[in-house]
Image (cartoon, rainbow, N blue to C red):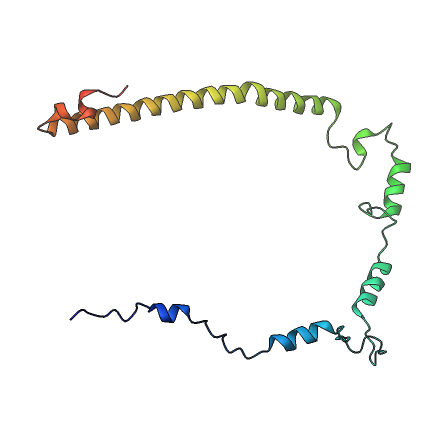
Length: 171
């Protein structure tokens, strides 16, 4: 007796039309609703508000900014009157070293400039050359250490001719 395949469809079942699925909505009703113009969905657009919003922090910020005085510059040490007295009693032409901000005289300033230039161009280059020499010495020592470790490794291997690192030494 031949085994029947339950999943195989008969030719009679293929010829029958498939019934429409039962949907919870009606397509006719959707078409009918789309044919009518939509009603105003947003209600209350024309209503006047029954509340008032007031931001008080903004006023505090404006009051704080109004109390600050940005028109005057920085106050000199000792106050405005002491600075004016200093300017009148000790004119800058006659007493350049007694002025409040006279840090260096001209010879002192020239000395500082020369020291900075020497430090930047001479000492900086000397330090770079010493650093380069030290780096080269350290690199050479590291390469020698690696070569020594490889030679010890290769000496311990029974088949050192088949290892590429033992056949061709490092440059």
